[in-house]
Image (cartoon, rainbow, N blue to C red; front, side):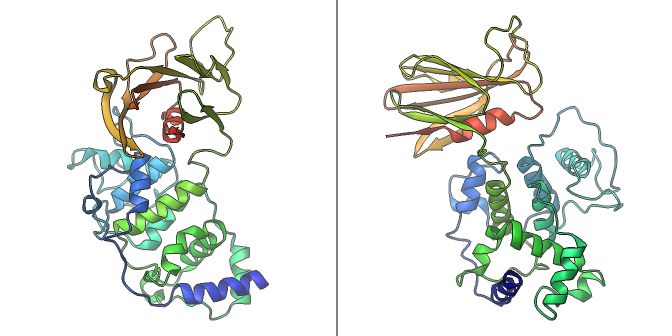
Length: 355
């Protein structure tokens, strides 16, 4: 009961009218997502267009990346929605929207999706929350809260006329987030930010903030189940999955980590198997090492991430990272047999230099 009362006080102050956003200075969430390749990295804060609106299709694209769902190249649209078709402009939209429906991020029951329309904060938050794997509170929990907090926001949402007679999904969403992902609300609770009005049209800053918080708490960020490898000789650290074995000493120029027996006769990878190879030599020409390169940086040191030649010896996909620091070259490749490169993504995102 005390918890419910406490939330009532928080919610009442949290969603009161506030002052304007600081989109021109607060780009932490955007940079966080860009470093994870969830959104495209920009050279300056203006490039993220934080104050601009965001489309429903763009929100779906972000949600899919949070959920580790990649867009296949050879996908034929099934025409779930009458306004989302392969031959209508951006064909990535058809792939993204239909995969979102297949993964229960949006409903197939609607005949249209309106991919290029703007989206409300509540709608965007609902999609991002589903991508993070957070389950909604039950109707029973909602009813109990209503009985304890008659007339308290969000039980008396002023937007009933717009949401329609059934606003329970909005109430359940907001209460779920307050319980399971309270960090979503932090920027709006601050005296320097406006209140989270659920029916207000979302901008890019809103959605980036939702996505950043959900990515950090949902277990889709660097997993707490991972172990950390620290190399004091070459001054770097990297995370790797549990149940893996390490071959090589930290002074060696070649170190290998894998999650299957080293003495297995065949090198063919089974589903969800990987091996990580670290080549630690002199400075390298990263442009010659990486295919389809994308630039990233660690504490101002720039490197490249992308692909190498296919893992012909193991039947997997080979991802690569290359960066030079203080006359030392770090070339790291992960060969894995998964649907979306999840091992490489987490391993590369964790790479860091140490003192």
